[in-house]
Image (cartoon, rainbow, N blue to C red):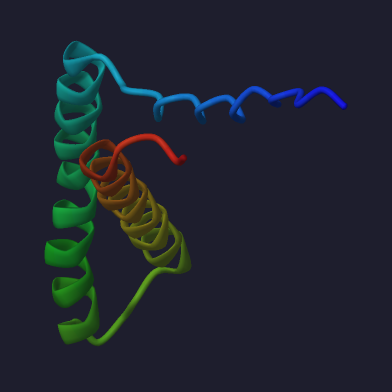
Length: 84
């Protein structure tokens, strides 16, 4: 009887790394997207304190908040890195 050795299993591939320039670009774009969110918060407080609120202004405030949340998510994705 001969002893046949099986080769060891292959090593798993290393996790993918993101380019540093892409990470910096994602953070910069995320910070730019935070600006409409900041304006929406400022105008939202002003809109709540006024007696008459226009529905169009309310929709623009919600749109600005949504863009700001997108900026937060983009910065978070840039810092965390790619998924394994």
